[in-house]
Length: 101
Image (cartoon, rainbow, N blue to C red; front, side):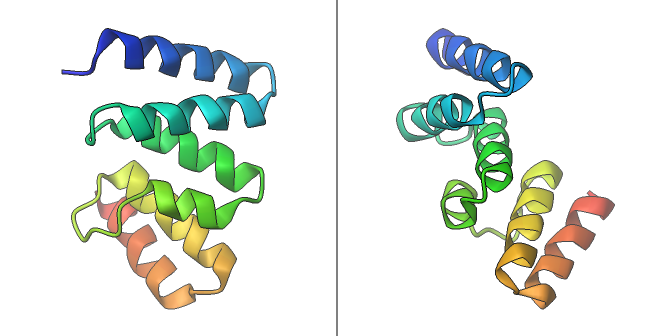
């Protein structure tokens, strides 16, 4: 179960995304990832997506575990981030994993 507090921060971060404040959203999502439950997929997805959009690819990669059994959304975001770093082979593998989800 996700904690109520983490859920509230996720909702606030979602609101920041909606109004275009990706810096604030990324900071909140990362706070949930750092302080919340390790399996908070929604916070990891939000943080990684915001960080990629901001061009902070290394930080996005740090938010998503390097794991062969990622959820499809996380695999897709990790693949997108790796593509931006030039790691085309690993990016393709993860994007295919996400697609076949």
